[in-house]
Image (tube, rainbow, N blue to C red; front, side, top):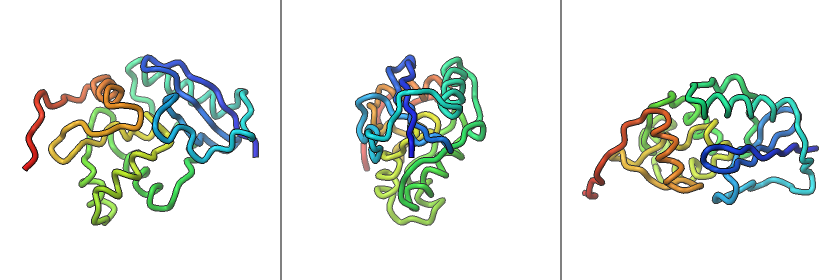
Length: 170
């Protein structure tokens, strides 16, 4: 199977876009944790295809302050059934809103917010499947595979009001 790859220059740094002829496989910040995980680099062709073109248009609209719909893109992330279940919940978090890891665990009837966090962290479709919209149990900023500075920027870009001081753990 041929994979197509292009680099997208975002306001937050370069993003690697990878797709096959069926859908978008990944959007990663260059150098982030789990960068292009599971991708066979020997199968990559540095060329354009329809999926990548649509993805660039979607990202252009997003960074211009619009709220493009995920349904406009054909997504084909590779992961376990559990990861895909978590990623589906991420897709349902509205623009400018957030959820906690515990909220997601409850929604999918999982007893471990930590397991949910592991799946969120391995989301291969940064920004498009909005893992940046997941916060800690008290609304605090938690880890992000490409750095919390990018997570904060994305949330502020969407108009999310962030906590101004950290709350001590109980």
